[in-house]
Length: 290
Ligand code: PMP
Image (cartoon, rainbow, N blue to C red):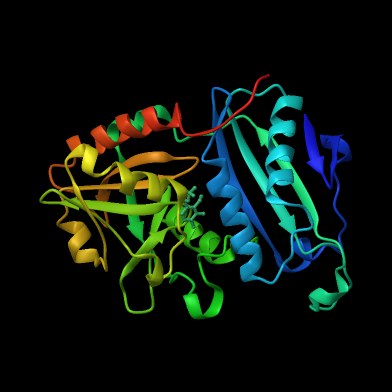
């Protein structure tokens, strides 16, 4: 396996970062999770734009252009001869000293890992997930804006631990007022009476690329799309619920907090959106050859 590290492709065993890297010491950095389908990197431009926006959010200047970053992603995929891949693109503050001061980190560290994709087991896409609401609240936008896809994922990991302790794979995280935000690694949607709803970005959620795709696919599935405040009560009474993310794609939810969603079966709109999303992954993105 070859890893892109600061402009070079190196063997996995040689891909090392310093223990003084502020990405390691403080989670000071940003990242993206991207996917390629049959030699097409899905929405690569959108992911790179979001990476640079996250970096801007933490005052981190990425020392290469977006075009160079795109080329680095493609070069890494080609070097590893991967047609279908999960891509992890990471930019840290770089090596510094033991203090917090980012001015002591002159050179950001950039690395790209391309690997096989690890999905939820296929039967979960047919049967749907059971999830729970967890006590840990999502970071507030005023403290650490969830729109910044930073290397500091402890808030999400705390939520994930609580989900695992409850025996389920994902968790609904609420904001400080008790409104639904997102799950630990996915956005959340509900459908009620032909309306597709998802929490608006300002409540404190990542502006998911899959989320945007699903919102744009709504009308094709015969749904009106709305970004709005959502309560747990509304989720309990939804017709359909599902999660979206680059790795998970669209995964149905059939039970939350011990309540079945509608009849506890995967809904027809969710199935339609899954089908339309699959079609989108075959045509949207940047092509390469291996
Ligand atoms: N929310 C969080 C917290 C995430 O980490 C992710 C990405 N795994 C998402 C939502 C989904 O975003 P995307 O569709 O861009 O992968």
